[in-house]
View 1 (cartoon, helix red, strand yellow):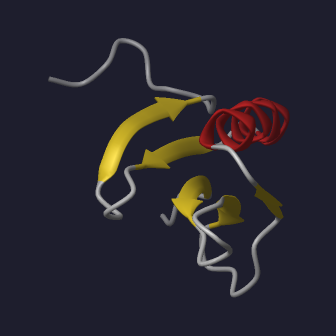
View 2 (spheres, helix red, strand yellow):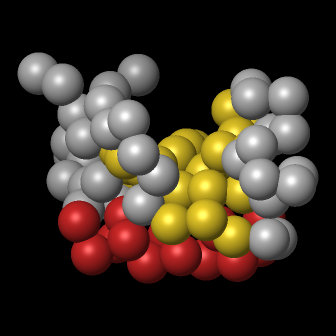
Length: 76
């Protein structure tokens, strides 16, 4: 099963940030500041019940949040 997710990623636009859906070639929306992109990404992921991955400037994952249906009790 392939989980849907949203990603806050560095954008090539003058050091900006973007929110992109997994598997999509296009960004959902671009922002000048990371804080704005994270806020939009959280709202979008809550609405869609998906995972949100927040990346660092170098592209590595900084933080991950789940707004989907998590198994209860959690594994591990």
